[in-house]
Length: 198
Image (cartoon, rainbow, N blue to C red; front, top):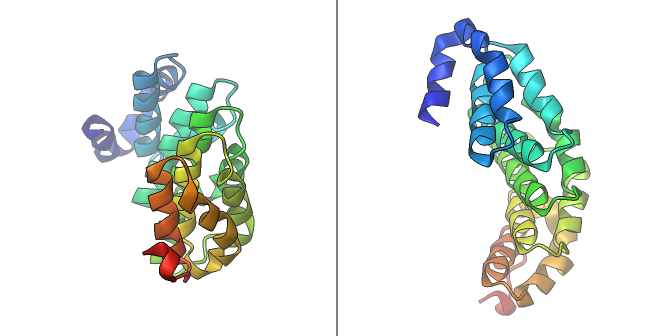
């Protein structure tokens, strides 16, 4: 991560590493794939090509590449780099909430949660009409991390996520205690406060 952050300080010079970052992303190794995605994210401010590479990777045939790209886009949401339209990736991310790969589904919800958090900090709504229905579908996912991460992302919407209350209530009985806790926190954030949550 520190090495990737240093790339940002190099500015336009970092573009020289673009082909190497692409190779890392597509390396077939989880650790190096994530490193490549981080490098592309931190180079995106100086290079539209790096951002385009990361954005395109959200649709890659390889699930590991899609997941690493999701991580990279999540960094872009967090850092809010100038001249990088990270928000343009949102429709693809929403699609990836229904990915065939369970890890991609879960990690996409994390990235979307980061997106919504930053949007709220800037006084924006975070496209609730597009995002909330997709996150609600993931509340019924077979994979417990997908349910957990969807509940955590929904709580960022607070009152705008009231439609999810019935599903979140069901998750209070989820077999996974982490999911139960996330559902409880989400219900408190969307304005549902009653004795069943204590």
